[in-house]
Image 1 (cartoon, rainbow, N blue to C red):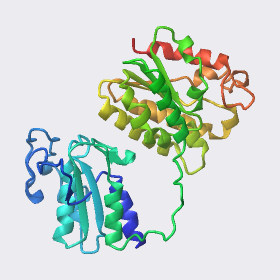
Image 2: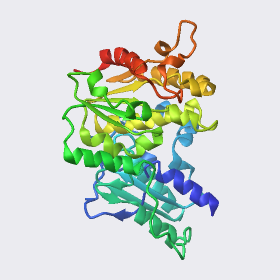
Image 3: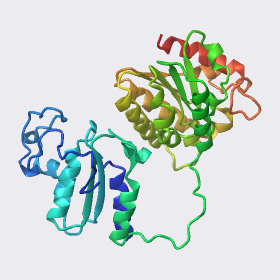
Length: 354
């Protein structure tokens, strides 16, 4: 039972789901779906990602990177969900895996949405519909889940939900500027309440919410990033992630940032995405080795991307001896005084899109 559920969780968040067709699905997949074992073409079909030239790889390579070829009689059942317009992970991959399951008579379900793009599962919705009810039904039918006899009267809201509702209320009262510069992330942005005064002439939208980590920003990307259709997104986040525990390494933060970047880039292909480096907070001196590694790896990765920037504020917040400057911070030694934000203004301004 534990094995089945563990693999189910992995697959469902990898954008895969089951042979249940929604009314809007027309039965057509981008490009024609050929038999998987005959997929040898180098010429991509119209509307689908390029197919790799399998002739360049050994049989061992093909087996290693083709999950559908690894399905056996002992493979656990799987519930798969995918969006037809996913340009990052081709929907044919999920179809191939589902076909492999059925060939081995392994229980599976494949749910395909016409639209939803990449990463919609994080938001639990595609085209306004949640796939969770179908997933729970499949789990229940297959004996993997049994509803509790008693349920709590009020479901617990996810972290920072009230902050997000406050932003929505604010937007309803006064529409944010179109084609703006969006600040999103944790409390260093949240507490920058007079940020517009630092950048006169720039249409600033501040949607930082204090205490947030990268998973929190990812969770609410469809609420406080994508709807604004900004021309530039400035991200300050990751510091709380690294401070949350030893298990959150620099590599974890880098991967989380890549996930957030991917969601933004897929939905806002022309926006400039800028990452403000994690700052040297004196109260968090013990995590600075991780901070430096995360900053360095994110910077190197962003250099390979178009319309992407790494804004380095770390060294400018150190003294001549490379020590952290306590005078830049308030009493908690974490949040900044105006002197700290003045440094940020000087370094960020050249990167702002006019």
